[in-house]
Length: 521
Image 1 (cartoon, one colour):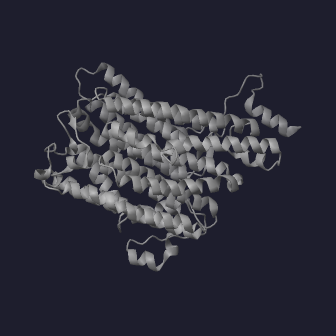
Image 2: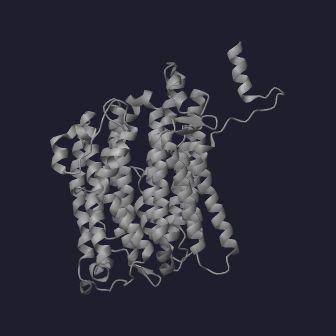
Image 3: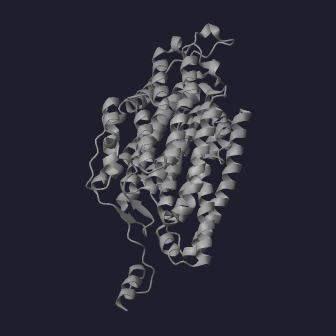
């Protein structure tokens, strides 16, 4: 059998020794560089003569820049796979990897001043954040369940440590313990699900699930159903979807604000990217998981936005906001898988980018409430921000407008595209809930703006008077520019994942969009 001999020779040398799989290093270099940057930063910390983190920050940013360069250089290359088909390259992978690198870099820009004001200027933050970023990059670039689990654990373990970085605060330690215990529980579900999938398919590649499901073997189908359900539970926890969301507000409130910003954006991108890969592998089982995710999306959007309205802590409010936004992203994914011939993944990617930059920018402004080791995260702690730093208060208005969905911000285009895609896919109930929950969110987002523009003398305890440094200004300006340039980055993102033969045009004017809804397809 010649074909069997050829397959055998791919893995065994003529001498009978195992042959390592061929590796296209262009796909792996970005991940390797980010991991290496973390190792180099750790070595620099060991030998530095003072407590300055400047060298570590610059090393980390240079590493992230090099990784971004290697990711960007692959956009001209064809889709493919390497490392025994465990790492894939397509436009979705490249966009999400670039986004994760950008999230990490922006987090670094405003972290140092915050960490020093809080008295926890530990260089471990930069190393752990780099390794967490590498874990997220692995998650969004694999269709192998074993590699997916490896990336998830690299991301999660780093975040467990980062959440408890402020060791002198009880609520920081509490957030780390809660996150660790619930995360370990969710990991158990994920591993158990992987075991079921392996039992049903005889492999760990998501592409094998469709073939096994088509066999019509009752035992195999039951294994796949149990396995896919358990895997989705684990990923729903990481994406903070109801009813697996309980950890989110507590962890967001207790963790240092810069860690919360990195977690809110980076972890969400990695979880949604992994969820997309898994659902793509489970496409043949759509009739089973789509009704469940339909209900989860509705519950997530409603609970996240309604409960956020009664919060008095800014970070808890943004935690519930993150839950609500996760619901919007699930709507986008469901629309894509319900009608893949009509709906591309463009809306999901555009809203992920918009969510990341407006969330990072908001948390960067909130970090100004820290001064001389004290941090206030209540709404009243933002009183007088417009007097102390008019620039930061003005940018907070921009981020709040994007979170609400005011045109022409990136948040508006993201929500509009998801709304249109859900209608195009015949998911009218999801479109209605999305619109209503977005209206509800106006209340608490405007509460942030109101607090920032309330005079300081109205506060019972005067808020901190810290002024933004260059790093925070740079981070917020970059985020604000991305928010205001939503229509500019939306079109190339959509075109990159659009099936060939279709054209897209994104208008910056709301009237133009309304007059031609199909333009956002």
